[in-house]
Image 1 (tube, rainbow, N blue to C red):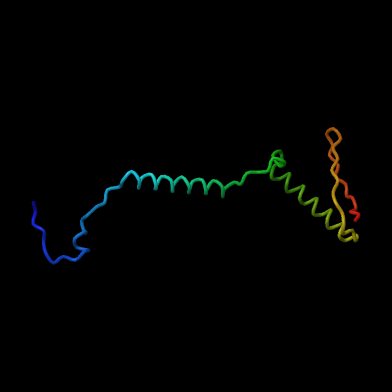
Image 2: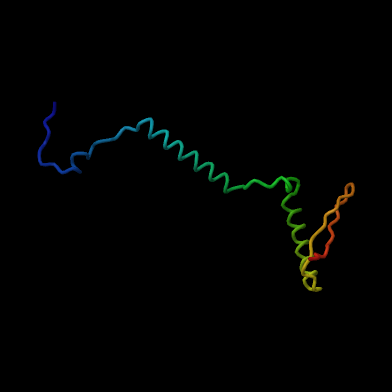
Length: 102
C-alpha cells in the first residue's frame, strides 16, 4: 500500500480522482436527452388542427388574404356586427356575411 502524503489540500487530494458513471447517472442523462429531442420536435412543427388537414400552406395563405380583404371592405362600408355563414352544396362551399342581430 502506498504511503499517504500529509499536509495536502482537499483539491490536491482529489486531483487525479475520476468518478465512475453509475447506471442512475446514465439513465438520467438519457432521459434529459430524450426530453430535449421531444422539445425540439414540438418546436419545429406544431400539429395542425384536423379541420386544416387538407389545406396546403399556399391555400391557407390565399384564403386568409381573401378573408382579410372581405373584412376590410365590410369595415369600410360601415358593417361592424356580422358573422360568416358557411354552406356546402356538393363540391361548392359558399361563405356569406350575415348581420348579427341582438
